[in-house]
Image 1: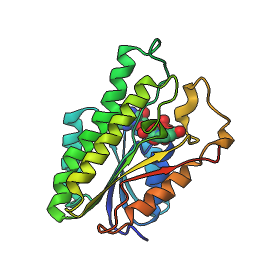
Image 2: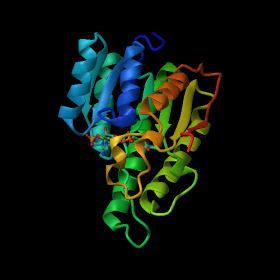
Image 3: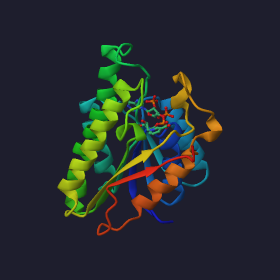
Image 4: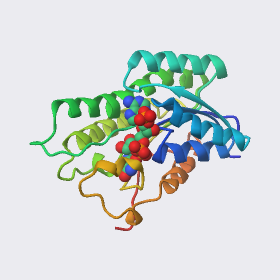
Amino acid sequence: MRLKNKVAIVTGASSGIGRCIAELFAREGAIVILVARNMGALQLVEHMLRKQGKKAESMVMNVSDREEVSKGIKLIAAKYGKIDILVNDAGVAKWGSIQEVTYRDFDEHIKVNVYGYFNLIKETVPYMLRKKTGCIINIISGSGQRARPGTVAYATSKFAARGLSDAVFEDLKDKGINVTAISPGKTNTPIHKLAPDAPERKKMLDPHEVAKLALYVACLPSQVKMKDVSIRPLE
Ligand SMILES: NC(=O)c1ccc[n+]([C@@H]2O[C@H](COP(=O)([O-])OP(=O)(O)OC[C@H]3O[C@@H](n4cnc5c(N)ncnc54)[C@H](OP(=O)(O)O)[C@@H]3O)[C@@H](O)[C@H]2O)c1
């Protein structure tokens, strides 16, 4: 029970990496606020956790919508009196070279993968500062360190999100709040459904391994800093 009674917001908790993190954090005793846009998918996770006696509640939120995020975070803080952990995971990935990418897809990546992370951090940090403690985990990607062909929108958004994580780390490092960017390599989740060159799924990372790393990060004391960490499959 390494996260007993910690209030943890996990975005993207209905699927893939976010879902594995939410489930693991709940098993470790956290009260997990499951965030995504699709209530039905969130409730599947919530009901499964509640059946096991874990604490979870669903909150529909489009992370790119500033008003929705602000309202949601205020509700959570009013209900629980604190926010201990924020995991920014909700993200989109559509493939396309500079010739192929549409303005609409590029906008969507910036709105969800960059503004989405910024909105949640901006609204949550005041509550963490009040308690002089907290942990922010931003799920970035190998594409936020080195772009591959056909990832114009995705890589741009992930480089920006990594820069955001880095800058927020610097602002909060001596205020009791840890900020960590976790960059997974290819991970076996539904996000690869539309990828043209998806490698064999068995060669990808298991999302539960990323969740275990997130748990390790969430348990670090505020004097121990892990600003940026990568996790990769063998190939
Ligand atoms: N899988 C990989 O290989 C890999 C590698 C490195 C990094 N990542 C990163 O890991 C994160 C999770 O990816 P995944 O592979 O687990 O993807 P996934 O299975 O497709 O899950 C994406 C999650 O994000 C939510 N989401 C998307 N847009 C949203 C929005 N506007 N507002 C709120 N929630 C939204 C989705 O729920 P709704 O659609 O219901 O909103 C879903 O819960 C992403 O940031 C991704 O870039 C993935």
